[in-house]
Amino acid sequence: MTNFIKSLKQISLFPLKEEKFIQNIGLISIGVSLVIIVLIMSLFVLFTKQNRQKDLISDGVTLTSMVASYSMNELKKDNANKLLEIVNYTGSKSGLVYSIIMDTNQKIIARTGSNYVDNTLIAKRAASSNNHLKQIYKNSLTNHTIYEFFRPIYKNGKKEGTVRLGFSPDINPLFSDNDIRGILVIATLFFSLVPIFYYLVRRSFSSLGSLNNELSNLIEKNEFRKIEVNPKDGVGKLVERFNLVVSSLKDKCKQMSLSYEDSEVANKVLSYEKDRIESVIDNMADGIMVTDSVGSITLVNRTMINMMKFSKQEVLGKTVNACFDNKEILSFIEKNQFYGSVFSQKNLEIVLKQSGGENIVRISYQPLISHEESVMGNIIVAKDITVQKAAQRNQSDFIAHVSHELRTPLNTIKSYVEMLMDDEVNNRETKIDFFNTINDEADRLARLINNLLNISKIEMGSLMINKDLIKTRDFLEDIFKSVESQAISKNIKIELLLPDKLSSLVMDKDQIRIAILNVLSNAIKYTPEDGSITFRAEEDESFIQIDITDTGYGISEEEIPHIFDKFFRSSDEKVKAHTGNGLGLALCRDIIKLHDGKIDVMSNIGQGTQFTLTLPTEDSPRIKNYSTSYHSLVEK
Image 1 (cartoon, rainbow, N blue to C red):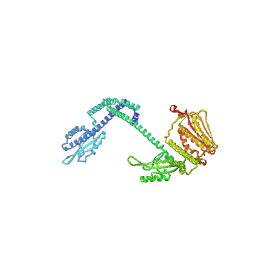
Image 2 (tube, rainbow, N blue to C red):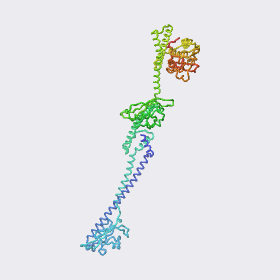
Image 3 (cartoon, rainbow, N blue to C red):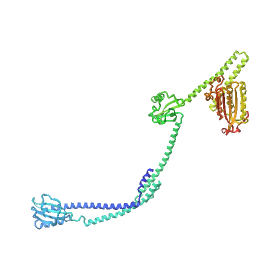
Image 4 (cartoon, helix red, strand yellow):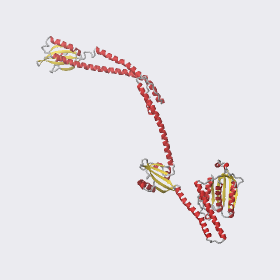
């Protein structure tokens, strides 16, 4: 529809002027009429001349033949003159200007029209043929064109004389009075048709003004309106057809507009879906590369680019062989390309050097199958399984550690029980030591199993946290009293420093108690005799900070990032001399995180260690939705 409007605008460069247009038609009609009249007159003159020439020749041949049919004896005396007068009267209408009868000696027997006859010339034009002849010449006396017909006169086969008749088409007017009157009648009739034609044209084009206005409206405002038609107008059918065309174009324009809007929506949806899919593919954790049926790369995501160290512009449109420089990967892809499903190896695990170290990557290769079960191309997926492999190793290490931690106390218990059952120990004090050792190892097993269960529940998200509003000062004093005797038994100075007032904590009392006791127990375990431990709590805005500082063996800078790993034990021989399973600090960290807190450590070898536990108070924004009406206030 836009193209149609543009075409109308181009037409509008020559605006329709109805009145001037009709006047021009009138002038053109007059001019055409004059041209037609001139043409008709020219044709009429030509036709008349041709007819007169034909009549002249016909009369000339006929009259000369008639005169030549008489003998010279019959043409003597007055007979010849009378005959020529009859011939002259008959041929006058055809332009007969002279007639001559001559004997064989060129003597004129009779003649008419002496003004047109040159005797000298006649003597020279003697007949030399037995047939009638015709010759055309210019008369030197009158300058008229003369058609001369001559024929010999015979008697008994002997030539006795010659008859000559001269005709001139110039002496008679071309048109008679009747012809001129006919021509005037025809011209008058034809000219009378011009105003009638002009009137009919003006009437026929009376609707062109409104048609012009509607065309201007259509061009300038792009509005479609039906043009009122006068059925008596000559252009009425044209306007009706124009209305039909405009109506049809209007409907088609609406349909095209709707179709265009639908197409725009569909294109936007498709573009959105395409961008979304490309974004999803581009942000996938696995590297993806797609090739077409001829092996050219059509798609590659960001992970594959980062993993293989090339840019998207470098690989799109190229073959796989031109992009990978790793021989193992190329060999794996080539085997899958050539052997297809016959080749059994569908995955390749390879170590790639990255900026941060080495990563283990699993490469997989699969064909892309269409709905028609034809191969559209191939997809190469690169998955970084470094963490997965590390998890598998950690799992193996975890099983080994657990087995070791369980085997050691079980072996001790089993050996002691066997010795007691076999009555190998008779000393009462020794038996008591054995029973105490068995009891300690059983407690050790129980703690190990409880820690494992708690860590497992935390990792699985199934550990139940029962938070209550706890009086912090009373809670910390209770914990301090439970470990004070252990520190005193090793001659370790342990000190509790608490402010007069501490805000309450919203927490699971039992879980936080386990976390703090683990840190305090480690401080007592790894602090030598005559050492000191400080148990301090301070309130800072909406947090309570608990510091546990000792003067123990300390932790090396290299080992600090790993002390919260499960089953981690220091390589320090002093630390190894004490029993432990490496689960206490891992459990402590997980419990603190579950309470929206954090745990930090600072340590120096030979100088001691400080653990800092930070927990939000009841007024903290993290606990703002907590309601004391649903919890009991625990005193101790």
